[in-house]
Picture 1 (cartoon, protein in one colour):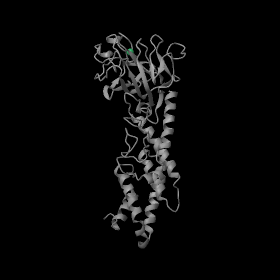
Picture 2 (cartoon, rainbow, N blue to C red):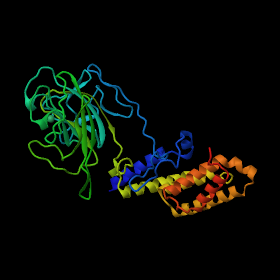
Picture 3 (cartoon, rainbow, N blue to C red):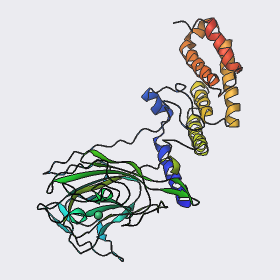
Length: 399
Ligand code: MG
């Protein structure tokens, strides 16, 4: 539970940094009071100007047979062709990884054992390239066998499946022993194969499965696993069963006695999914409300920066916006007062001064209409009716 809370804290901090403040929002031109408001499953409005901007990533480049591509800017490289510093033996107690690096490749040294990353991680996008030695030897599972174990637990099979018959759930890009690849898109031995994997580990709480965990695998750009649910850790001959995973684990590569080569191994950690505090995707009512409260608090905080007695409208509108997310009682009272005063001040203006308020009043009128339409404020909300009357009387509603 503590780890979950930590994750939520990290996430909320990250979101706070990314959420648009009034100034940035004004510059972005994204309007408030626009799309449908937050609801019991969605903490964000449609086209919500407060929603964090996506992280900017500079894409890498694709590999050719001769040249590995460049990873995206935020990727964590596990093997770049130079050394094994990020790897160790997967034997109990670790120790140096004994595989061979040469010509920019990492090659299985048969009988030295599996290797694993020193670093541990969970949900990720993983990129791995591998190639079989030229010159076919062996058959079925004995031909160019290795494996990529996600979190050290789930094997995405590496095998020379090019013109090689074996059991379907043991082909290259199978979730070994569980699910065959949807297609065999392998290149001949000697050529590099490209795996792009999206992995979400299972999430359990109190012994109950909240998310079974999934893996998606592309082989040379062809989908082989399509959001395949996980069924525990990989075994041989034995049927495995769903189970809880730790938060993170090492990436493990298998020594199956064949000199398979690897290159260009990197991953990108994925943000938490909805069930673990992420705010994109289907949320529980409880999680959506918790996030709405957080967003409302951030907007109120932002509103406090806008306090200006000679121009109270920006603060009033920002506070009004916060009520879409949470009808915090004190804010409700404050907005009632500010809105009532705004309309009263407008009414008190002499006709020659009133005209200069046209654009602002139309803007505020739009916001008042919005909050009543979506029941943030009651249908008979007095400031809305009073302001609408002024706008109508002044014929400001006409183009
Ligand atoms: Mg294997």
